[in-house]
Image (cartoon, rainbow, N blue to C red; front, side, top):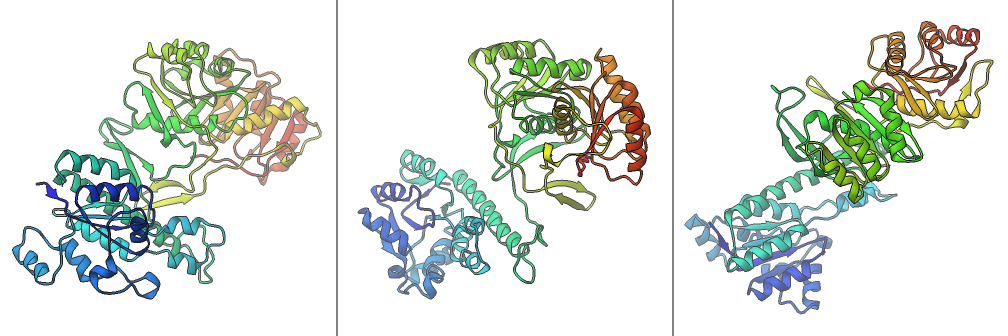
Length: 521
C-alpha cells in the first residue's frame, strides 16, 4: 500500500542535494521539520521550515547532543498507522505523523581517517540521534519512507511526482533495508576503531572484534564446482584499481573461478610500469611478458605455455588496440581485462561472443587486509605489496650479475610473487620461459618449470630463475643449472645457505638474495 507524504523530517550532516530536495517537497505542500544547522540552511534558501526545537518545545541541549530524542519526533516516526490505539495516542499528545525521514550521520569514518584524529575527536563524531531516527523510521517502514543516501533523493522525488505525492510499499521496504545496512556498517566502523585501540589508545594493526561489510555484486551459477552455490561480493568502498571495480563490456556472466583467476592476473599486470600482459590459468600465471606494445607483450607471454593458456584469463596494463585484440581473438580465452579498449579492438573481440571483456581502472591501490576462511574462523593479514629494488639486492656468489641479468632477475621475482608456492620461474629478456607452481617440494617445481619450457620449445640457456622462498637443499640449484640458468634470485635464510651458495659457485652461477620471501598459498 502506498502512503501519502504530508510531513518530512530532515536532519543531515552531508547536505549534498538537500536544498533541492526540500524545495521540491515544499512545492508538493509537504511540511518540513528540521534540526538547527539544516533548518538555517533551508530558511536561508527561502524554504518554509519548522525547527525541531520549536516543534518539540524543548531547546537543543548539551552542545547539540540532545535535539531529536523526544516523543514528538519518535512518536511521529514509530506510531503504527494500522493500529488505532497508536494513532489515538499521538493525536492526544499533539504529535503529527512523520511520513518521510531524511537523515544522514556524523562523518565518523571520515573523522578517524584524518591524520592526528584523537580518541576524543572520534567519540564526538559518533552520532546518537541520527541512527535512532533512522532505525525508528526503517522499523516502521509500513508507514514511513526513509532516506539515508543522497543518491536516492531524485528517484524518490520522481516517484512522488508520478504518484500524487505517494510512496509505494516496495520503495519503502527497499529504503528501510538500505538504512539497516548503513547503520550496521556505521556501528561496525565504530567497533573496529574502538577495539583497535590498546590500553594507551594507540592503534592496533588488527581490532579485537572485526566487523566486515560487503555488497553483493551477483549470484553465480555455481561455485568452484557445479554442486556448490556461490555469490560475488565487493567491499563497500573497493580499493582503487581493484578487480571489484570492473565494468563488463561483453560476454557471458562471470563465474566464481573467473573472478578468482581474473584477480590474480590483474594484480600481477598492474605492478608493471612497461606495457605488460599476464595470462593466468587455475590461479597461476602461465605466461607473463613486457614489451614495447601490448601485442608484443601478449605474443611473448603466450609463447611461454600455449597449452596452459588455452581457456585462460588475460590481463593488460595498457589500453588494448585492434592488433592485440585480433591476436587474442584467435585463441580460446575466458576473460580479457584492461584499463580500456579502442573501438576496433572491441569490434575484433565482439566476434567471440562468449569472451568476457572487462574494463578495470588502472591504479595501485590494495586491500587493507587479505582474508582466508578456515573452519570456524578467519585468517587476516596485510597484502603482499612488497617489491624489491636493485639497491636492496645482495649478491652472495663470487660471480656478479650483469645489468641485463639484474633486470631479468627483478622481472622474475615480480612474477614469482603471483605463483602458488612452491614457485620456480625461469625468465629471459622480459618474459617468462617456464613456470613451476604449487608443488610440495621446490626441486619438483624446478623440474616442472624446465619441462614446461621444453614443451613450449623454449631454450633456457642463459636464463634467470626466481624462487619464491629459499632453497632448502642444493638439489634445486643443480636442476635449474642443468636446464641452462645462469642466475638465481631467492630470499636466502635457509640453514643450508652456505651449501646452496657453494653449489652456485661450483656451477658458475650468480645468486642474489632479496631478504624476504613471497609465499602464496
